[in-house]
Length: 276
Image 1 (spheres, rainbow, N blue to C red):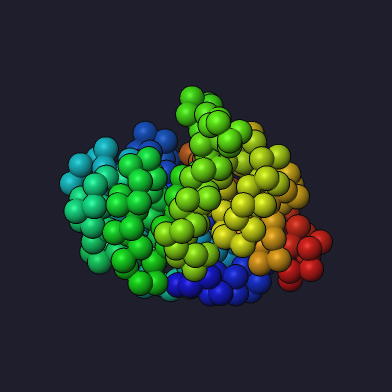
Image 2 (image 1 turned 90 degrees about the horizontal axis):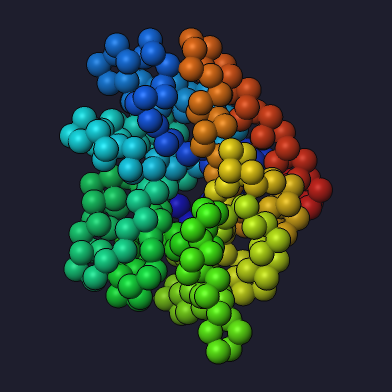
């Protein structure tokens, strides 16, 4: 899937919603835990409930790896189900990998050859040789951590060098030398939405994957005001607010209702910018 195909999906659905499949076995409805594969069963129902409102899904690998072999099997079933039934969906592996070149190559093979992901989140901390192996896979996106939404982001990301440049700004500038908007996206958290204005001066056209709206307190309206460009340029992830809207037998309907509400807000924001 390329840059234009993502934009076409945004226009078609009038949405830029990504649903995060951060599926915690402890939080899914109790009655599902009696199925053969509770995590996959839950994920399948969430996807069916939200696919009309979303352009992307983002499984967080930690929640699957924590369950050992069974968790990995649930992940495989989930991503193949999505790709086989909804091939236009943008599928992100939230893996946050980043290691020396030969190791990164093996990570890339795992997610791009063995699994049908369109993109993977990576940490740029070890430099170009830890990221470029992922870029060797044509038609796949690398989503680089730039400015995250967690409390500890201030520990390193706002470090200022002698040129009065924050570390996250350095990351944005240097990584553009490794690939263009057709291959690279950036993770930028919603909890400091005002920073999107300066980020857009550095990366005006790249897509930004924006977590932190909803449960973490980020504002969708502020994210759009500061970060939206002529191609939308935003993929806003929401996880807990949607997938855990209910832990009763009505979880399917409640998740659908939350996703629909967010979709309606996004449609308005896109229309206000004359994108749809």
